[in-house]
Image 1 (cartoon, rainbow, N blue to C red):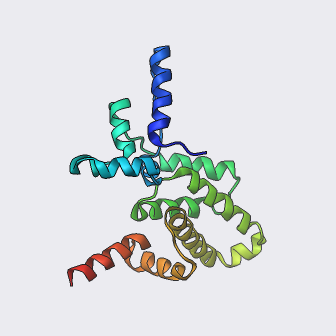
Image 2: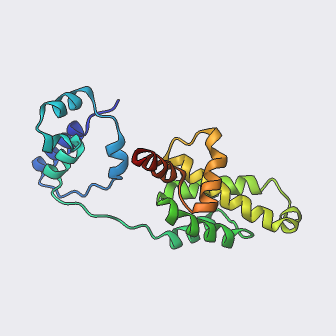
Image 3: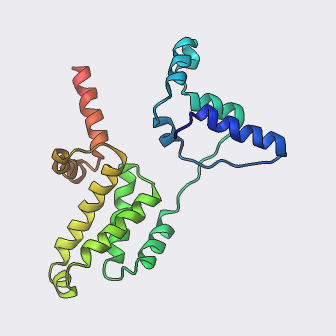
Length: 193
C-alpha cells in the first residue's frame, strides 16, 4: 500500500511532536518527486495558485516539516574499492573502477546501490570465462565492461528500450553523453527549428 507524501510526513510529524524527538530523514528526493501523486494530491494541485502548483505535494510538505535539507555526496572511489574487494574481483578490479569513474560523471549517475549491483552482475558474467580466455582477450573484456556499465546505469535510471541500446552506446562513445540527455538535446533542436 502506498501512502501519499502528506500522509507519510503527517505520521512522522505527529510522532516527533508527541515524543519530542529530533529525526533526520534521508532520501532521494528525485525519486520521491517522480512518484505519481495520488488523485487527492492532483486535485489539490489543480485548485492552488500558479506559484504553488509548480511545486509537488512532497516539496510543500518537506518545507513545512523538515525546514532545511542537505545533500550527501557519494564517495565513489572508496565505495568502488569496497565493492570490488567485497565481491573478490581481482583480475578486473582496476578496469571496473576506472570504467565506473569515467562513466558516472557524464551520465550524472551516483546511485551506489545500482553501481554495486552492476559490479555483482559483471562478476557473474566474467565467472563464465576461464582466466586464460580473459587474459587472451583482455581488450575485448575491457570494452565489454565499459559498455555493460554504460547500458546498466542508463537502463536503471530511464526507460531505455531494447532498440535504443546500440544508440545509447554510440552516443556515449562519440559524444560522452547519456542517451536521455542526447534525446533532450535533439528534441530541443527540433523545437528551435
